[in-house]
Length: 199
Picture 1 (cartoon, rainbow, N blue to C red):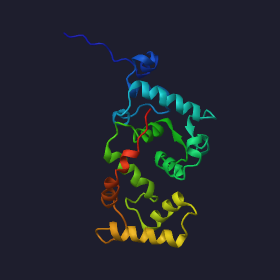
Picture 2: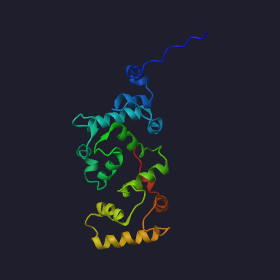
Picture 3: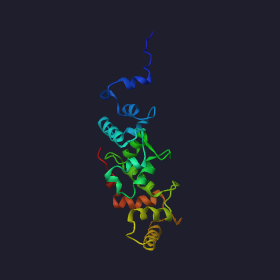
Picture 4: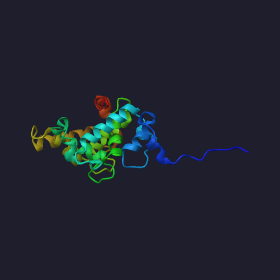
């Protein structure tokens, strides 16, 4: 007869010193969720997750366990970034207008130096795909570019630029850009290499 020990209760994870926790277990102790998928944590090591946890807590001014747009905007680096609200919309996967620790880690992981090109290109695509239908329409491209250029171009000039971009990049003639069409342009510009954050 072979004896086996009963499995330890899950709460045991929270009793171990942080130095003994694997990165995903460390996330479990810091966030609001019971567990996180392994693929969410893969770009970060234990020390990076600890640093991200400290950053998250510093940003969480009201100690709610989530970050609002206003809390993100307290970072001087983000205050003048015209796309910060779009980035937060992408981080906020459940659509509650707050970013919890799981969403924060998942969002930040897309900027990891170890993140792959496809992941970064998909993130960039989602900046423009406002209605999340898997395509960038003429109107969506106009809205995002307007956020970026502000008053430096008139609406007429910007619309001309948008129309020309759609005409040139739309290979299947549906008057919108798919991820593949978008990637062909952005990959050529090596845009994904600029989407890097060192933790």
